[in-house]
Image (cartoon, rainbow, N blue to C red):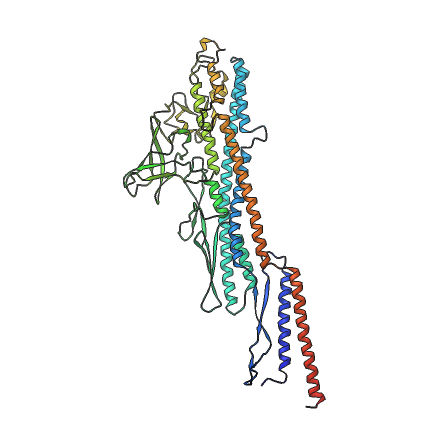
Length: 607
């Protein structure tokens, strides 16, 4: 049988329950503007009833606060983080593509197309009077200005690749830091929740860290409740590999490489690896986030790496490559040394390579730093990385393609002529070796010749003091005008035979006509190639900007949906506050009523 004062106990439980609900509401209101806060709710349940062993059954004993829970939808969390990774990817691409677009921009008067036009205009002026030394000086000056602009653009792209490389390192450090904090919070959460409480505010902190982590890569979050019903196993996977395993986090590391994947790569590109020895797949299409975008922008060559059928026996250190994807020296972007060959799952480094060209067909022999672990006859060989994105290496390769092709065509014509002194024309455009500062000199037959990827500054010097080389040695970073032309403009060859008269100018006319030669590039004339390059960079930047803007809007919609569930609505909290206040007042009135009853019972009746 219930106590005489049982009603007072029931009403008191109502006071406590209403007070707990109001405290939770106050907590919600106080944290309404805090980043990452999730709305909380007090869960009430009926207290354990008392059996009366009578016909009317059990008697209720009031209410008890069961728990304080978070109002959160895991579906929206997953959806938000997935879209956050996509946004991180697009926004990173946008930044670097806009930087590339600015490099090729023609908005000001110093663009590459304008500089190329100025050089050709100077040659057209020279046509009027080939003997005018001032006009010859103007031609060499404009040519030097054009080559210097190409060099400057290459240096800008090179610096951009360096920035991209350093940002990969920063991202890895951020991922490690966030993973470590999540692992630490997992331990704190389990410690608290083993006592039967919900660590709501710590869970908020963990969810906020997960949101920030999702910017860098796609993550998969799982939480499994153990048999005790209180502690959990919390796991975070990044691209399918475990990043956080409950109380432990796996670390990523960056390792500077002493190899090159593309022709114009800078020194010390970072390779990302797991500290526990697991392989980190940098080329995974499911990596997502900023990390994937940075890898693509840093290494993207639009699939224009060298490949072909390999031939070599186990134990040998020379690998022959035939049936190759590149039979054009202007479009050969394989690193000259310290490159990488991929054959199936195996990678080999090479110190250099030789190439034999017979009737336009190229056969390569790579000198490996380690011996082959198997016979590779007929197996596909990839040189460097094969990345579909038009990243920084792609645009550097395009510049290199232009300078090699144009220099080759220009020099071939210029070599046919004679300068003012009746001397055979020298190479007008050349390249300068970085480690010796010596110029290259070209003399190969473009249909059949052999060359080595490396040029020895001591043994490959010709009678003119220049380095004997092929146009493979020329790239957008070392492209320059022959010193002989710069120092002595009278060495510009304008006519085939000076004895026929200086005004004949048939060689100079051919050089001028190159600007409108539609067969030089697959894009058409040299002008069209440069315009296409500028347009492509602008188009890619515009596409990245559009994707970023679109994804940002999608992310806002998803976040709005998520916040509609988990965020604090002040109007709703105001209504709850009134509701709990009324409940508290009603419980108070019950106590007041019970007090009067007990007063009458005890004092009025004298019991």
